[in-house]
Amino acid sequence: MFAFGKYQRRNLRILYDAIGTLADAVGAELNQAKYLAILMPPLIQKWQQLRDSDRDLFPLLECFTSIAQALGPGFAQYAEPVFVRCINLIQTQEMAKADPGRAGVSYDKEFIVCSLDLLSGLAEGLGSSIESLVGRSNLRELLLQCCNDEAPDVRQSALALLGDLAKACVVHLQPRLSDFLTVAVKQLGSDIKDHVSVANNACWAIGEIAVKVGKEISPIIINVITCLVPILSATEGFNKSLLENSAITLGRLAWVSPEQVAPHLEHFMQPWCRALRQIRDDIEKEDAFQGLCAIVKLNPTGALGSFATMCEAIGSWHEIRSTDLQNEIYQVLHGYKQVKTLPPVEWMI
Image 1 (spheres, one colour):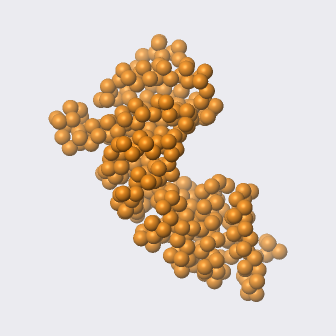
Image 2 (cartoon, helix red, strand yellow):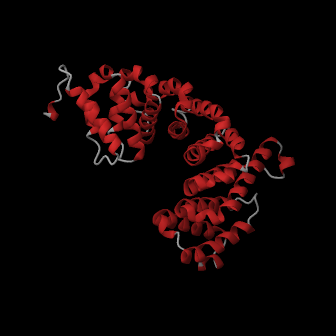
Image 3 (cartoon, helix red, strand yellow):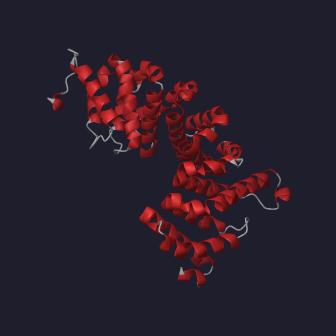
């Protein structure tokens, strides 16, 4: 913090980066009054000094994103002015894109990207506590506009925020839920090759929405599966994150609407299970396996040809913490144990 009084413009960028990296590294340990009393006053002072058109805001916005994620609920005391400024920055840039003279600034998409990323940090850090801020703003309409933006990096950040808001306060998305799902499916289908990160965030956001709204997502399930199966079936060309998110989202769709997904199981079971076994143990993997069990129960014959691969996916767990999931997997395997014509699985004998 002493460096804030000494550093000039170029070195301040390095300082912001160092603080952001520190926040990423220590996480919630940063959320102590004695640390915040040292850390926040000079950052807030810089935040207040910089104009909305000043590009020096970019590294500061990125720094605040890391701090918001690290502090979690501890960032609540700073949240409202940060949230409001992000909204204003996005609105100003959207106006500048249409009418620079009226906006009084030249259009620069980086202001939108950095603001969307900081709003994602707030949603991740505050969780459901962000609900009141979202409810009093026009973020929903701005976000839908950004999800349709022609710039891939704007769409990428907008779709990430869509997923974070689905986790934190999906109720505020529901008046336009159909529109958000339509644009997410569109980005998943059209950006797979050219803009993988956009497609990846669209895929993840769809999965997060699914676990929150359940059957409301039914109208788009088949369209999403049509996009996901080629990704899972490809032998090369897609990055690891997209493969994992595709496997998780497919599982989440199967969990919330197994009767829609189960009839198509044999078309994707084997590559899906291969992808599932690469995913680390966490709540997202639990959701995916809940979906796996749900559709295998409805269509055990469709999964029979992929039985060995399914067992390998189950065996990829180091520890299944969910008792419900343990029971579901037991029921699936016990059901197959009663079948007399299982394919050979030598490594299990």
